[in-house]
Every structure is written in structure tokens, then in C-alpha cells.
Amino acid sequence: MTYAKSFAVTLLLLGSALFSREAAARQDVVLPDLAPREVEITGDLTIVFPALRRQPLVGFNPPPPVPDISPSRLPFAEAYKQPSADLPPSPVVPPEPPNVSAIAQRTPMNGKMEASVGRYLDRKLTANLAMGYSIHSGTLLNFSYHGSEGHEPFAGSTANSGFDKLAADLTHSRRFRGMEWSVGAAGFKQAYQLFGITPDAGALSLAHPSRDFSGAEGSLALRTLPGSSFRAEFLAITGFSKVNTDVYDPGVKVDPVTSRKETFLTSQALVSIPITDGYVSITAQGTTSGLDSGSYPGTTVQSGFSQVELSYLYSAKLNLKGGLAVMGFRSDPQQVTDQKRSLAYLSPVLEASYAVSPALRAFAANKPHLLSGLQKNAYSAAPFIQDEALLLPGLVSIDAHTGMEYQSEFVTGKASIGYKDEPFKRYAAMPSTPVHGYSSAYPTFSYEPATTLYGRLDLGFLLSPGMQLGLDAEYRKSELSDSKVDIPYFSPLSLGGFVSASFLDGNALVQATFRHESSRPIDVTNSFKTKSITLFGVEGSYFLTPTYGVSLGIRNLGASPEFWHMYPFESSTVFMGAKYRW
Image (cartoon, rainbow, N blue to C red; front, top):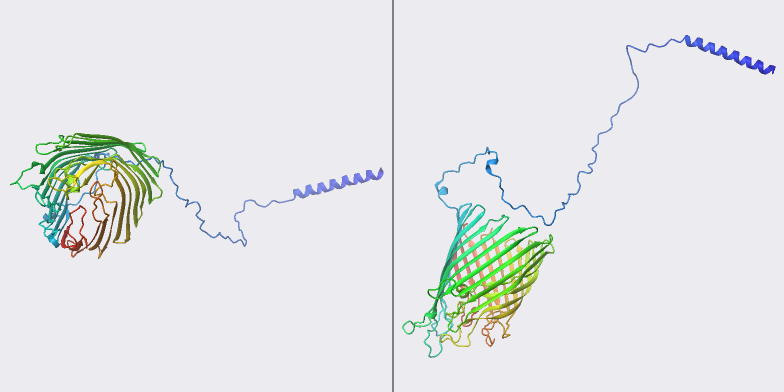
């Protein structure tokens, strides 16, 4: 205990001494001056900035976005309606053109003319003229003439195949207030000999009678301009045609039957109303005509066709159309032994078009239609028909077809197969009994139900710049429904093609053509057939200057075409001509 107490007292004494010494030392410390007048910093620090580098561009080139546009969206097609008064005045003043009388007094005009002459004194003249008075009005003029002195188709005969054909039309159009109206006039005249017929023994008819065929018409058309949201069209045509056949010598017999005049009036209208994803169209067409002297439209034949169709864009690739068509006609007796006739049909209108790719399209459709029964169209298609032919329209109640169409930069093509049902088919055939003493080469018109199966192929190739090739082929299996025989003057096989080459900066052109028509029957019993026709032609032209050119060619190379029985035409007709364009 004594030692412990002594050790504790010693520690207390030592701690007091140390504390006292530290307190004394704290009181003796002198602090430095904390507000110096000068500061100097020294050292070896080197300041280095980092190198400047271009940062990578990330996120500035994303793929272009593809907008989600509804397939039913249609482009804005209305007219720009902002009045000019709302626009600020333009500081630009249009320059004044030079006062040149040749320019100031001239109507803008362009066109071309071509004339040729060849073997058998074959002559041809064509002219096309376009005149623009302003951006709102213009006039078009077309003129064509083709004639020939002909040849002797039969040795020791007075028959001659010479002919003259003249046609011209003039159209003036003008635009105003979103509409375009046009007026036109047209006329034609043909003169030729029915050199294939000879009267039977004892008949009073003339051998190889001459025929004059002429007519004229006027038209009025009105339609909305492209881009209008509402589409409307109207057309009216009125005119006449005359056919005169010198069947008898006027000093022996005068027969008014051999001369016929027809007056006619045709009108058609179209209205198309846009709806969501498509449009509705209404079409109407009517024709009325009167035959013989003193007649007027509406006295003999009336025919009509109307159609309502809905077009719907089902998707970006598929377009659908559907509707109904009504067609028919009514006719009073045209001949002594004729009777009243009337017929009407209701038929569906269908069409589907699918874009397989940007270049390939598949389609299927049924398009009924009405064929013209006017005299001017009938005698243009069958120039050697009898003088008093029965003139009625043709009805096609079913024309169902399907196929593919291809279009690219260098190749175009279309292939289709189809079926036609014609409850009233017009066809030309040799008569079973003589007409005016002619028992051959004087066909008549007849009407009967008919059906046709057909396939067609059209191809076009752009072989190189300036060089083109075209081919077409059609096969038709047609028969008259009642008699179950082939339709007369209807070739089962038809082939054609052309190749053309343009060079020397387009100033030179060479073209070769080919056409083949297979043999076809000429009567309803199919007892007689015509020969097949194979025709070749070559033509070349060269413009010596930008305005004047020359041409040289040959038609019907090595063959005498005879589509109509007993009517062979000239073979190997060489011709040369001149061209003028401006």
C-alpha cells in the first residue's frame, strides 16, 4: 500500500510539471503576419492541354423514315382558288418582246405533208396541221388521199381495180372556266369498181359496176379539264352518208334500191363522281338513224347502251370494278321482205387488276359493248357488200378475258385469252340466191348468234436506241351458234409484225412490215374458202434538211392480197415520194 500511494503521488507531480511547462510554452509563441504585401509562387509545374480531336458523328444519319400513309389516300386534285387580289404585287416586270412583224402576225403552227407516186400510178397524199392561237385554243386539220389507176385482175376482162379515197376532218377547241369545248367537221368520198362480180347469163345488171360512197358529219364536244375533281364528258355527232351503185344501165332500167342515203344522230355522255377509295361512273350512248330519201334520224333504227360502274381501290396493288350494262336496239323494216326487230340485254361489268410487281400486272374483266350499225361504218369495213345491205348494230353481251401485262424500259408485252358471246353477230357471206343477177363476189350482211374463243399476244422490244421490234398474234375459234359452222370472212389465225431503225440523228428511218391472214370460208356452209394472205412491205425515208425529205418503198411484196373473194389487188407496188414538215 505504501508503495502504491508513493507511485500515485509521483505521477501527479510529474503531470502537473508537464502541464505547467506546456502552458508557459504556449504563451511564448509569436504568430506570423497573415496579410503579406507580396506573394511569390515557385515550382516546376508545366500546364499541358489535351489534344483536340474530332468526335465521331453518331446518330446523325439514321435511315429515312417510311411514312404510314393509308392506301385510300388520294392526291389533292382541286384547282388553285386563291384570287390574285390576295397576292402581293410582283416587282418583276415582264420584258417586252421585240416588235418583229413576222412574229407578231404569225399564228403558231406545225404539221407535216407527204406525197408519193408509184407503180400503177399509185398516188398518196397526207397532211396534218396544228395551229395554236393561244394556250386556251387551237385547231387541228387532217387530210388524206389515196388513189390508183389499178391493174387488170383478170386477163381479157374490162375489170379494173382502180380507186380513189379522200377523207378530211377539222376540229377547233377552246378552254374556259375549267371546261373544254370543241366543234368539228369531217367528210369522206370513195369511188371504186366492184370488179370481182359478173352478172349471170340473161341478167340486165352491168358487169363490174361502179360505186360512189360519200358522207359528211359535224360534232360538238364538251368536257371537264384534267385535274378536276368531277369528271364529265358530252359528245354529239350528226351527219349523213350515201351509197350509189351503178347496177343497171339507166337507159335500160332505173332502180332506186341501188342508191341509199342514211342520216344519223349519235350522242354519248359520261359522268364520274369521286368517292372514298374510288369513283362511280355513269355512261350513256344512243344512236338513231333513218334510211332512204326523205328520211330523218329516228325513222329506221334506234340503239342504246348505258352502264353504271363502281371503281374501288382495295389496296395499293388491287383495283376492283363492278357494275351493270344495258344495251339493245329497235328497227323498222328496211327491205320488202324484212320485219321489225328488237333486242335488249342486261350484262355484268367486271374488272380486277393486280400489280404483281412494278412492271407486271395481272387482270381479268368482262366488258360488254354495242357495235355500230351505221352505214358509213359498215361499208368502210366491207366495201364490196351488196347495195342495200341490212344495217343493224351488233351486240356483245359477254367479253370475258384474263391475262398479264408487262412493261419495262426495253420490253412491253400483253397476253390474254377470252370468250365472247354475241347474241346478234353481223357477218358478211356469199348469198345463197343471186342478188340483182349476181351470184358470186357480191356478199350480203347476215345476223346470227355467235361465240368466239380467242387468245392474243402483243410484244414490243427496244433493241437499241432508235431500233424497235413489234410482234402480234391472235388465234380465234369462232362459230355461228345456230348452224355450228365457222363465221365467214373471219380468219382463225392472224400474225403481224414490224421492225424499224432510225439513225443519222433521226433523219433516216427504215421500216419493214409483215402481215399474215389464214384461209377463211366465204359462205355459211363453209364449202368455199379464200387463200391465205402473206404480205411484206419495206419503206425508207431520209430528211435532207430539217424540213424536206424523200421516201422510197414497196408494198405487197411478191403477193396479190385477196381478203375478199374475187378481189385481188396490186402486188409489188413500188413507190417514191417527198416529205415536208415544219
